[in-house]
Image 1 (cartoon, rainbow, N blue to C red):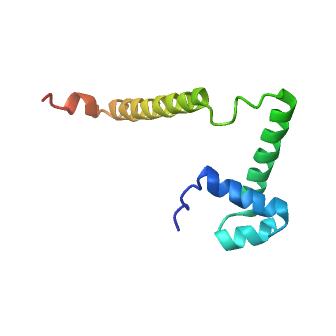
Image 2: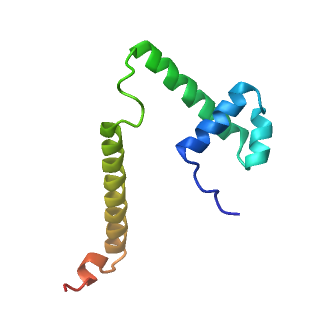
Image 3: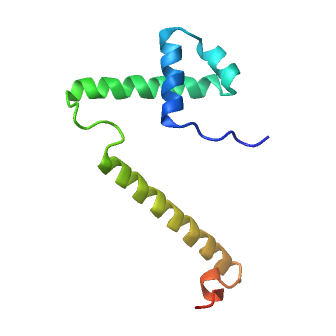
Length: 107
């Protein structure tokens, strides 16, 4: 069986709040939503730690998901993809193949 698709931030928030309010337990949430209890426990920890950090910082202006954070996440994703492509090229070259960038034709 394949991995379940990722949950959005809003979905995670709703699940965490439901567990925190006592509407359902972590185990029950896991069964209903086909998630592991470990995953839900991790989300709860992330949520409470994030709240603790915000209280300690006392800064309500810089909310999680700020523009700068979004830009950095985008850059990390782009660089990770480039690194993965370079790794595939290197493995192909080491095995005696022709790297795909050399096989491409220009338009």
